[in-house]
Amino acid sequence: MKKQTGFMPFWLCSLTMADIDRVLRSNLKLRHLQLLVALDEFRHLGRAAEFLSVTQPAVSKVLAEIERMFALQLFTRSTRGTEPTAYGATVVRFARSVLADYQRTREEIAAVASGGAGRVSVGAMVVAMPGLLVDGVRLLKQRSALTAVLVEEGDLTRLLPRLRVGELDLIVGRLEPGYASPDLETEALYTERMCIVVHRDHPLATRRRKPGWAELAGQPWVMPPPWASSRIKLNQQFYRHQLVPPADVVETASFLATFAFVRDLQAVGFVAETVAQRFEAEGFHAIALPVPIELPPVGVITLRGRRRPPAAVQLLECLREATVRHGLPRARRAVASIGRPKT
Image 1 (cartoon, rainbow, N blue to C red):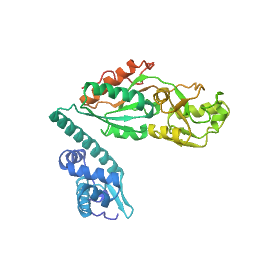
Image 2: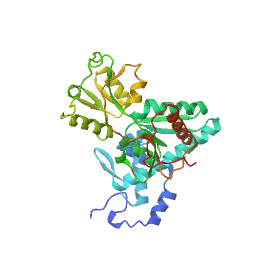
Image 3: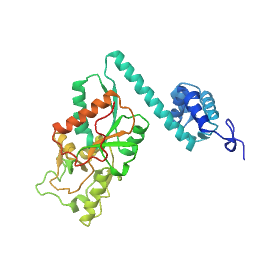
Image 4: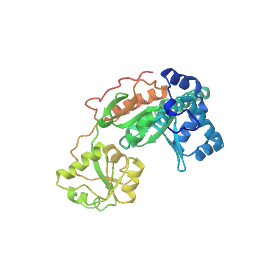
């Protein structure tokens, strides 16, 4: 076997669990973790060096140092850039988790020192963005105006990895059963129907006769991503009427994109009723066509066993209160209720 440069050949590698524990606990420094995450983000030695404000040879030297610690190749190098190996991807996940905890602790200390009340990072899906989350944050700010709230929008494919490494404290959205996992805790808050919307200037909104499914099939649409239960159930409605689902579609998990395409491209949208109601004043018009489908409840996802910062605990309570205040239909059952959060 050809000898690898800069680290022990793989066939000589005999790291024990004790060796790995020593590397993770004692040998790895903060600068090592930052470099690993930067390399994973940029997939290029030069761009990672520029981001870290060091030279490219310095990045190569530190990476070789880390690989010698593990006696494993963590990144492959080529003219096209760098790619994490299977070992590297595992170590990068560890690095992200540690750095997220470091950042959270630093912010909490700074908040206490400045008289603030901490920080909470939230992942938000479209169904929860303009209704539940806005109301929950409003209540939070009434009680603790200096609490910082970071909101990151997306779907579960984007948000769950960030929750798992500690970059998010919780996710608010639809509790898709296909993403259930033993490491996740979910609390169902309410159920909500979906509706079909257009802009008030759309031809379908300006006439008295309501459209049928056949006419809707020929319209341009902005829809949830293919994996979403709402998209699957919507397609089933077309099949039920012996129609092929619309072909002219834009797929997005972004509330802003959905709003913009419905408004500016005269597309047909498929959104939760509270979303349509909140933006009726902005030109959303719900078509009077029943959509008889059942969807998973809307609720909160957290990581099992992780300590929740005080600000996250407060926001959870505010989200529960917002559900009650607005009389949203309570979910009939929780997928795996988290009960009251542990501090």
